[in-house]
Structures are given as structure tokens and as C-alpha cells.
Image (cartoon, rainbow, N blue to C red; front, side, top):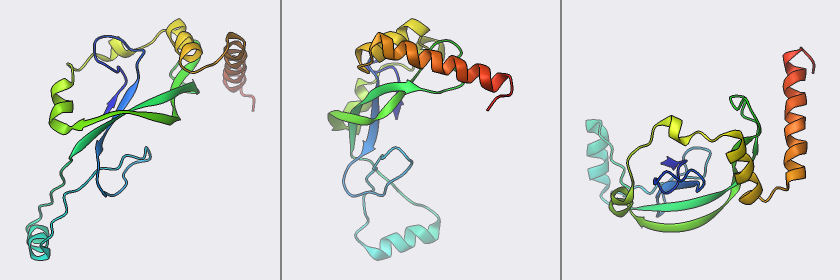
Length: 154
């Protein structure tokens, strides 16, 4: 379950991503999420469920990860630099599914989760480790690329 808002108290600067899983489950998606299935130890029981058209997957724990923030190239970002999650992360904690669900706040509207140009700039500078000069150069490159594509260039 992704949580672009972090701690759900209106602070959009703390990006976290929760992965439900644990144990020895199969990989899903491209994000490295590893959910854990509760294996049925009785082969007959599994076969009977398969024949009946039912399958069960359960999750045991939630691992909260804090991902790095990097300059992105999302075309829907019309002003300034886009902000993306990088590949690097740190595990911030684990909890049972019930504990994690109990700690979640209410779902926020999309408008509340949008960041303005300067908010993204500050996040890239503070949390992403970019200097103002690096951000200025990246913004210029993005503008040139956008203009070139708009006017039919390479």
C-alpha cells in the first residue's frame, strides 16, 4: 500500500511506502514487494480448494520503508522539476497488519497530496541532497527538452 503522504497528518514531506508481507512469499510487481502466503501444509486441502475455485492468501506483517527522493521526468509535472522515489530505501519499521491498519489516518484527497514547484524543490534539496545549482541545471535541461519535443525536435 503506497502512502505518498507519510504520517497522514497533512505533512506531505515524509514519503513512506508500506509493503505487506513477510515470510517466503512470491515476488509481485516491480517494486520488490514480497507478500507472504500462508502455505497450506495438507496437499489434499489445497487440491480441494483449487477444485472449488477458491484460493487464500494472508499477510502477516507490514514493513514501512522510507525511499530516497530523486529528480523525475513525469510529463504531468508542468512547472519545475518532478519528484520521484529512488531505488534506495531504509526500513523504518515493521508491525502486524492489524497494528498498521489501526495506525492509518483517513484517506486524503488528491489535491492535498500535490506539491507545488517550491515544495518539490525544497524536498529535492533537503531530502534528496541536491544543491541549488544542480537543481537549476536540471530544470533548464527539462525546459529545453520540453521545448524541443513540443516544436518537433529530437
